Image (spheres, rainbow, N blue to C red):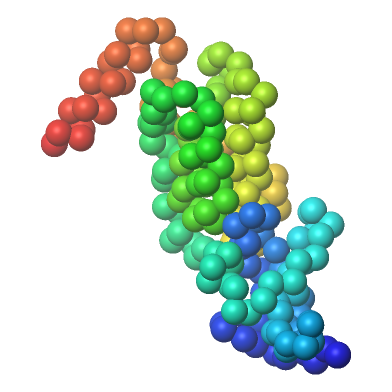
Length: 194
Protein backbone atom coordinates (compact mmCIF):
# COMPACT_ATOMS: atom_id res chain seq x y z
CA UNK A 1 0.00 0.00 0.00
CA UNK A 2 1.52 3.27 -1.05
CA UNK A 3 0.07 6.75 -1.31
CA UNK A 4 1.86 9.76 -2.77
CA UNK A 5 2.19 13.11 -1.05
CA UNK A 6 3.27 16.47 -2.42
CA UNK A 7 5.52 17.89 0.33
CA UNK A 8 6.91 16.86 3.68
CA UNK A 9 9.42 18.57 6.03
CA UNK A 10 10.23 21.15 3.36
CA UNK A 11 11.17 18.56 0.73
CA UNK A 12 9.02 18.03 -2.34
CA UNK A 13 9.14 15.77 -5.41
CA UNK A 14 11.36 17.10 -8.19
CA UNK A 15 13.66 18.88 -5.73
CA UNK A 16 17.40 18.16 -5.70
CA UNK A 17 18.87 17.36 -2.29
CA UNK A 18 22.17 16.27 -0.78
CA UNK A 19 22.35 12.89 0.91
CA UNK A 20 25.75 12.78 2.68
CA UNK A 21 26.69 9.20 1.83
CA UNK A 22 25.80 9.52 -1.86
CA UNK A 23 25.88 13.20 -2.85
CA UNK A 24 23.29 15.05 -4.94
CA UNK A 25 20.05 13.22 -5.63
CA UNK A 26 16.49 14.10 -6.54
CA UNK A 27 13.36 13.49 -4.49
CA UNK A 28 11.09 11.70 -6.95
CA UNK A 29 8.22 10.92 -4.58
CA UNK A 30 6.99 10.91 -1.01
CA UNK A 31 5.32 7.61 -0.23
CA UNK A 32 3.58 6.01 2.67
CA UNK A 33 4.26 2.30 3.02
CA UNK A 34 3.27 -0.30 5.55
CA UNK A 35 6.28 -2.27 6.72
CA UNK A 36 5.93 -4.97 9.39
CA UNK A 37 2.60 -3.53 10.46
CA UNK A 38 3.92 0.02 10.82
CA UNK A 39 3.11 2.90 8.48
CA UNK A 40 6.18 4.77 7.34
CA UNK A 41 6.46 7.92 5.30
CA UNK A 42 9.41 7.70 2.92
CA UNK A 43 11.25 10.06 0.62
CA UNK A 44 12.10 8.26 -2.61
CA UNK A 45 15.44 9.69 -3.73
CA UNK A 46 16.98 8.91 -7.11
CA UNK A 47 20.74 9.18 -7.73
CA UNK A 48 20.97 9.16 -11.52
CA UNK A 49 24.77 8.92 -11.72
CA UNK A 50 24.89 5.94 -9.39
CA UNK A 51 21.75 4.43 -10.99
CA UNK A 52 20.33 3.99 -7.51
CA UNK A 53 17.06 4.74 -5.74
CA UNK A 54 16.97 5.17 -1.98
CA UNK A 55 13.98 5.27 0.34
CA UNK A 56 14.61 7.48 3.35
CA UNK A 57 12.15 7.44 6.25
CA UNK A 58 10.90 10.97 6.91
CA UNK A 59 11.69 10.50 10.62
CA UNK A 60 15.36 9.75 9.79
CA UNK A 61 16.06 12.75 7.53
CA UNK A 62 17.86 14.76 10.23
CA UNK A 63 19.86 11.83 11.59
CA UNK A 64 21.16 10.81 8.14
CA UNK A 65 21.96 14.44 7.30
CA UNK A 66 19.78 14.81 4.20
CA UNK A 67 19.61 18.50 3.34
CA UNK A 68 18.60 20.98 0.68
CA UNK A 69 21.20 22.10 -1.84
CA UNK A 70 23.46 24.96 -0.80
CA UNK A 71 22.58 28.41 -2.08
CA UNK A 72 24.83 30.54 -4.30
CA UNK A 73 26.43 32.08 -1.21
CA UNK A 74 27.28 28.61 0.16
CA UNK A 75 28.89 27.66 -3.16
CA UNK A 76 30.90 30.90 -3.14
CA UNK A 77 32.17 30.10 0.39
CA UNK A 78 33.14 26.56 -0.66
CA UNK A 79 35.02 27.88 -3.70
CA UNK A 80 36.76 30.40 -1.43
CA UNK A 81 37.95 27.51 0.78
CA UNK A 82 39.65 26.02 -2.30
CA UNK A 83 41.84 29.12 -2.69
CA UNK A 84 43.31 28.66 0.80
CA UNK A 85 46.46 26.87 1.81
CA UNK A 86 46.17 23.11 2.34
CA UNK A 87 46.01 22.17 6.02
CA UNK A 88 47.51 18.75 6.40
CA UNK A 89 47.99 17.39 9.89
CA UNK A 90 51.18 15.54 10.69
CA UNK A 91 49.43 12.36 11.76
CA UNK A 92 49.41 8.88 10.31
CA UNK A 93 47.69 8.58 6.93
CA UNK A 94 45.11 6.11 8.27
CA UNK A 95 43.93 8.67 10.84
CA UNK A 96 43.83 11.49 8.26
CA UNK A 97 42.00 9.23 5.80
CA UNK A 98 39.31 8.56 8.42
CA UNK A 99 38.96 12.30 9.05
CA UNK A 100 38.71 13.03 5.32
CA UNK A 101 36.10 10.31 4.86
CA UNK A 102 34.09 11.68 7.79
CA UNK A 103 34.18 15.16 6.22
CA UNK A 104 33.05 13.80 2.85
CA UNK A 105 30.19 11.85 4.43
CA UNK A 106 29.15 14.78 6.64
CA UNK A 107 27.35 16.32 3.67
CA UNK A 108 28.74 19.75 4.64
CA UNK A 109 29.89 21.44 1.41
CA UNK A 110 32.59 23.42 3.25
CA UNK A 111 34.04 20.21 4.76
CA UNK A 112 34.00 18.55 1.32
CA UNK A 113 35.77 21.59 -0.16
CA UNK A 114 38.42 21.32 2.57
CA UNK A 115 39.13 17.72 1.55
CA UNK A 116 39.43 18.75 -2.11
CA UNK A 117 41.79 21.58 -1.14
CA UNK A 118 43.94 19.43 1.15
CA UNK A 119 44.29 16.50 -1.27
CA UNK A 120 44.65 18.49 -4.51
CA UNK A 121 47.94 17.97 -6.36
CA UNK A 122 49.10 20.10 -9.29
CA UNK A 123 51.30 18.64 -12.02
CA UNK A 124 54.38 20.05 -10.26
CA UNK A 125 53.65 18.15 -7.04
CA UNK A 126 54.42 14.51 -6.22
CA UNK A 127 51.99 11.70 -7.06
CA UNK A 128 49.28 10.68 -4.62
CA UNK A 129 48.83 7.22 -3.18
CA UNK A 130 45.87 5.21 -4.45
CA UNK A 131 43.82 5.86 -1.30
CA UNK A 132 44.57 9.61 -1.39
CA UNK A 133 43.47 9.73 -5.03
CA UNK A 134 40.25 7.83 -4.25
CA UNK A 135 39.31 10.20 -1.43
CA UNK A 136 40.18 13.23 -3.57
CA UNK A 137 38.06 11.98 -6.48
CA UNK A 138 35.09 11.21 -4.21
CA UNK A 139 35.22 14.67 -2.61
CA UNK A 140 35.71 16.36 -5.99
CA UNK A 141 32.74 14.49 -7.51
CA UNK A 142 30.49 15.57 -4.59
CA UNK A 143 31.61 19.19 -4.96
CA UNK A 144 31.17 19.17 -8.75
CA UNK A 145 27.67 17.69 -8.43
CA UNK A 146 26.51 20.31 -5.97
CA UNK A 147 28.10 23.27 -7.78
CA UNK A 148 26.51 22.10 -11.06
CA UNK A 149 23.10 21.56 -9.43
CA UNK A 150 23.09 24.98 -7.74
CA UNK A 151 24.40 26.84 -10.81
CA UNK A 152 22.23 24.90 -13.23
CA UNK A 153 25.42 24.21 -15.18
CA UNK A 154 27.05 21.10 -16.59
CA UNK A 155 29.59 19.05 -14.65
CA UNK A 156 32.29 20.34 -17.03
CA UNK A 157 31.42 23.98 -16.29
CA UNK A 158 31.33 23.27 -12.55
CA UNK A 159 34.72 21.53 -12.78
CA UNK A 160 36.19 24.61 -14.51
CA UNK A 161 34.96 26.85 -11.66
CA UNK A 162 36.52 24.51 -9.11
CA UNK A 163 39.81 24.25 -11.01
CA UNK A 164 39.96 28.05 -11.29
CA UNK A 165 39.56 28.35 -7.50
CA UNK A 166 42.16 25.64 -6.86
CA UNK A 167 44.64 27.40 -9.18
CA UNK A 168 44.38 30.55 -7.02
CA UNK A 169 45.73 28.68 -3.99
CA UNK A 170 49.11 29.82 -2.62
CA UNK A 171 50.94 26.59 -3.34
CA UNK A 172 49.75 26.27 -6.93
CA UNK A 173 51.02 29.64 -8.12
CA UNK A 174 54.58 29.16 -6.87
CA UNK A 175 57.31 26.57 -7.25
CA UNK A 176 57.49 23.60 -4.90
CA UNK A 177 61.06 23.93 -3.62
CA UNK A 178 61.70 24.07 0.13
CA UNK A 179 62.49 27.82 0.27
CA UNK A 180 59.17 28.71 -1.35
CA UNK A 181 57.28 26.48 1.09
CA UNK A 182 59.09 28.15 3.99
CA UNK A 183 58.12 31.58 2.64
CA UNK A 184 54.51 30.46 2.28
CA UNK A 185 54.54 29.20 5.88
CA UNK A 186 55.86 32.57 7.07
CA UNK A 187 53.19 34.40 5.04
CA UNK A 188 50.42 32.29 6.60
CA UNK A 189 51.69 32.73 10.16
CA UNK A 190 51.96 36.51 9.78
CA UNK A 191 48.41 36.68 8.37
CA UNK A 192 47.07 34.58 11.22
CA UNK A 193 48.83 36.73 13.81
CA UNK A 194 47.35 39.95 12.34
